[in-house]
Image 1 (cartoon, one colour):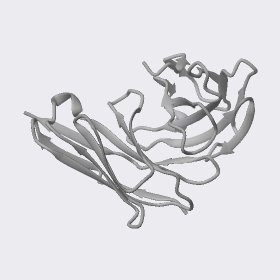
Image 2 (cartoon, chains in turn yellow, brown):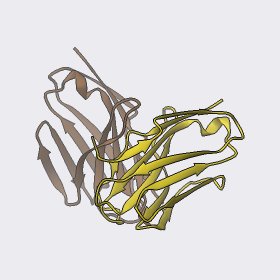
Image 3 (cartoon, each protein chain N blue to C red):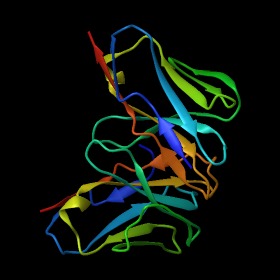
Image 4 (cartoon, chains in turn red, brown):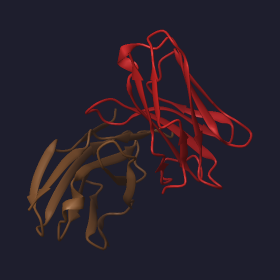
Length: 114
Length: 109
């Protein structure tokens, strides 16, 4: 158990809908990362937050947004969902913001868009 | 730019040794990571190399050559449970960690 908690584990929804994925980092970690992993694809970095502020952005679509709250949990919002958004979404956390920090991953949320 | 290359698939026999290679080109360098990921599960941290050389941790060792942009993960005394994908990751600048596509290792009896 990495100590990173993601909910829900599974999400099934329809095209055009909006969903929210939730992540609680390891105790004491200030940085949260979101990744997307499609079937047989590598991990694609979406966005990073550090202590409540956006720190780095990857290939995140405009339909997607995220935030980190004062208690350091984070939410990833996906809207106007398309079939191609079906994927595993992972959250990771690290103690600080730098690239050298080890990232610990949650179990992921499997999103199925029908 | 950032580019990380690893073989797509490898097979090995239980009890054997396997070496998974990774070559990288990144705009900056601050270490290289290896993660293990079983199908449908979370990636789990295996190793982090920031200096050249070999670091051993039980059955798993990781090697880094910064001048060659090259790393490998060495798995000894393979077990069936080692069947998984192995992801190489390197910093890509601006706090991003760039992951390779992963090497799917199949261990057979």
